[in-house]
Image (tube, rainbow, N blue to C red):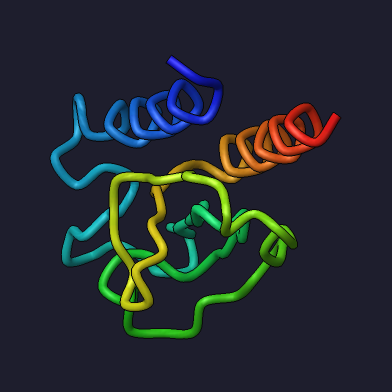
Length: 114
């Protein structure tokens, strides 16, 4: 299995692990949950990392880009578990996971261009 396929599976596994003990994953959708205390992080297959409010506000408020897409990445086959409207895929992860996986994406791309 090539590096990108292994990487994709590790991102998907990390996403799915958040649902193992909690059917809602990282999104606290309980009626009394505070959106400001439940921030949701997305890692997109183009390398973009975003953050938005969770709980009942999830997907109903602004999504803020923390790291923009990685130039030249779209030719590669990074594919995650959820699909956005523009056919880009993403995973719902913690902030730390998003940063670590984005750095790994950069590392994979650097190694493939050597």
